[in-house]
Structure formats: C-alpha cells, structure tokens
Length: 264
Image (cartoon, rainbow, N blue to C red):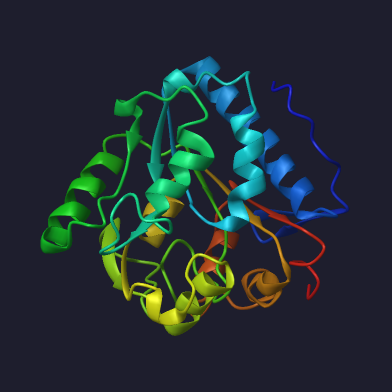
C-alpha cells in the first residue's frame, strides 16, 4: 500500500471493460490516479520485478506526475521507464520536447538511474526508421506492466490521431504526421505559441503497443476534453476516436474531472 491519500470519486461506472471514475477537480483526478498507479506498482514489485512503465508527456499529466513523484513508498530503483511519443526534429532541450517534460516532472524527481530511462530520440530525423525499430525492440524485451497517459482533444491515444490510428497496427512504434486538431491542441496547451511552430511529424507508440500493457491509466481533465471523452466512452469503438479502444481493455481506468465528464 502507498501512503498517498486517495480522494473519493463523485461517480464510478463501467464503460464496457474499462472503469471510469469522475472527480470534482483535476487535482483530485490526478491524485487518485497517482495513488492507484503507485499501489499497483508496489504490489507488482512485491511479487516480482522490475516493473516496466510507459509515461505520457502533457499538461494533463501535471497533477498525476506531481503526486506520483511524491510517493516515497515506491522502489523506483526497480522501475524501467519509457515514454509514449516525441516530436520529430525537436532537440532534447527544446522547451516543448516531451523528453524534457518528463525529466522535469518525474525522472529528475525520483531515484531512477540513467539506464532505467528509455527515451525516443525524435531529433534523429535522418534515421527515423532505425529509431522506431530500436525503440520497439526495447519495448518488446518483456511485458509492459503499465501505461500512464491521457486522451487528446481529437480522441487520440499517444500521437495516434484518427487519420493514422490503426487498431491492428503491425508495428509498435512508427513515425506519423500530426493532424490539424492535434497541432491546435499543442497551442491550446501552451506548448507552442502558434500552430506554425508545432512540428508536423512525431514518433509514437501504436495502439497495439499501448494495449499490450497489463494496466492502462488515463487521466483526462479539463473542458476541452469533454467531447473526446463522450465519443470515447459513449460512441462507437472506432479509429475515428482512437481512445474508444480502451473500452476493450479490462485493465483500463479513466480518471475524469467535472469538466471533462460534462457531456456524458
């Protein structure tokens, strides 16, 4: 068990195989997700180890990662960390680089060794196929225990936007072209000043890679996510809303706030 406090949800229900919990605020949603993730990892590490975890980088994850980094009961020395996606062409020290985000919000705050953090080198534009193949090889070395992420305004999981999402993708990591709505979200999130500043391409883990994890934890706060949440939970399971696929995963949990759940 973890010493992290767990807020009580306003509502809890099932969406096919997935579990959905609604909290009053984004802070409470992130705190509850951190409690559950930490508890699950502590339980996993007590039985065997190490644990292999994929993390997303986005402002929607701020509260979750802050609480997770505060967990002192978790043996981070036995955790291997991966990240979910990265822009193509951004250096690792660019303010919007997902590698930098995860370093600042988690990896630098917990006792993870350098060899425990596996990052996508999106700035290697001259050998993207090799980057994807090597990262996929690293992911496939053993079972993924946990994916921690969110849902995009266009319903994407990672950078699997509707035009490129493939529920039966033959690969686990691939380069993609970002759609317009996805790039607009990056501006809405404050990561870039204008849409022209947002890269056109990224490297992403695919839907089958994400679904291969034993547990999926999705923290989805804020009013701009409400329509995507409704499509994901109440709409058809379709690549038109890639996040809808999580309803087929018995280990998937969604943590919403009152704003992101407003259209349910």
